[in-house]
Amino acid sequence: MAQTRLTLFASMLTLAALAGCNQNRTVNAAAAPAAPAQAPQPMAPMMGGAPMGEAPAAGPTATGTVVETMDASTYTYVRVKTATGDIWAAANQFKVAVGDQVVVPLNMPMQNFHSGTLKRTFPMIYFASRIDKVGGAAPKK
Image (tube, rainbow, N blue to C red; front, side, top):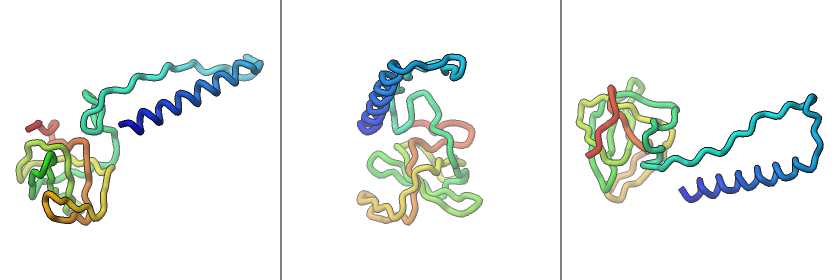
């Protein structure tokens, strides 16, 4: 979160510096029409890596059936049987049961992740801001 704010601040500072440089140059308006300026949008509050009230960022997903689930610390781990094989995924704790159909975002893979709480290593696991049940968002515990 702090790094995102720092990046946003640095970008805004750079844009301000560039805008200041452009004030000293004369531009032929007929030759180069100016694009309308857009005010920076305020950042949405974050919860679990996705802005609150919004769907997680689009990207690749896997859909399948939960064949194993466990809670550890503040996370729920699920092993999901997909059309291409089983995958492991984890998200903030949510209610899920073996047999549930879920959609797992695949944008945050981690290889050889070791969970000290579970005392096991996952060859590949996907961490997600949330894992949705097919037909709706997974309810919170």
